[in-house]
Length: 105
Image (cartoon, rainbow, N blue to C red; front, side):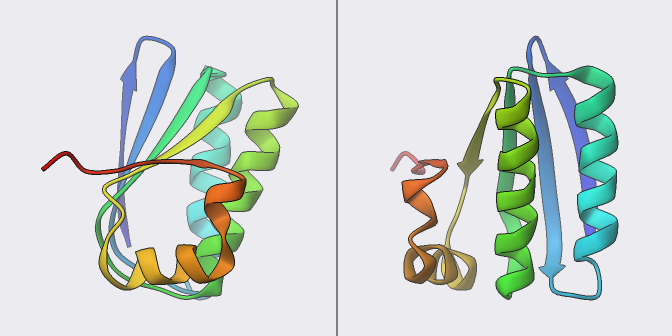
């Protein structure tokens, strides 16, 4: 898993590339949490455009960041969700808890 961060005004964008599974979930969560606590953005954007595989550990990463952002009166938005990760999100009905911005066609 490779992640890059970009700060855009009051928004922290996290671009995810690779696979999200139980082997990388803790490190991924810790890295994102560190940036959130340091920058205190109003919106956390998780860009799933480069994610090729995700298991339930990926859902835990998203929901944990949601909890942290909610504690700081912030929000979470998911972008570029497709393929296998989208199926996992749909089955778990995560869209009830976080905003998923659909790709424009």
